[in-house]
Length: 270
Image 1 (cartoon, rainbow, N blue to C red):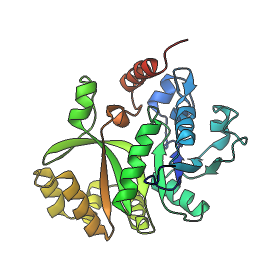
Image 2 (spheres, rainbow, N blue to C red; image 1 turned 45 degrees about the vertical axis):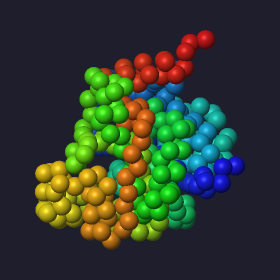
Image 3 (cartoon, helix red, strand yellow; image 1 turned 120 degrees about the vertical axis):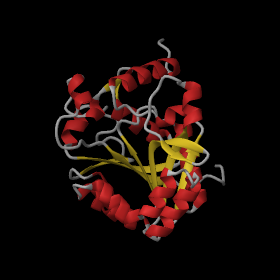
Image 4 (cartoon, one colour; image 1 turned 180 degrees about the vertical axis):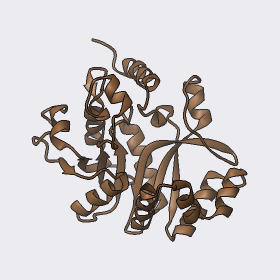
């Protein structure tokens, strides 16, 4: 075994749905987005298989509001036959689901969190993020992809970019909660989710000075993470991944078509 590899962590897979009808799920006539198919397999099946095959991952907790619904769309390998996988019924809040999963597993930090629509996730990406996050010794770490990395591979793809001095970045739906200090961030996340005027909640948490510094691109990505961490009393880090596909989650028909094309290249027909 590679002595530089972190010990296996618990993965929390968020597979629920927000209140209301998900337009992408409705387009494919599925009750939830996690059950949309790509390359003949549901998205959640793909993500679970990737996590299970990753040496950095130990137990896998699948968190959703309707577990029976998900189990109907998953292969038998994951539904009771694999001791690595367990299911947890949670509420509608995303941050609440993470908190509930941590509590259900005894707070055995660290945790790696991802989502069921992260269908292009692969083992090298999991390894790169887990190693980067573990070596940072952060309470909270997030995975990001730099705009130049994505556009070099997929110039027509559109993402939401967070702009800092020296570059713009898009999230990769991978999060790391390294220790109990992460609970402060989860509490803030929950507060922002619950507030109708979320912009004011963000300003209250991070302060107008930091937001202005980010808006004016005075701060680099890593500088902003350090500032945010100090503001919240935690160690926060960003792990920049060099795999363009890491930030392509399936949120739209265009994303679905691109993901199908990428998977067709990875998994040629026999």
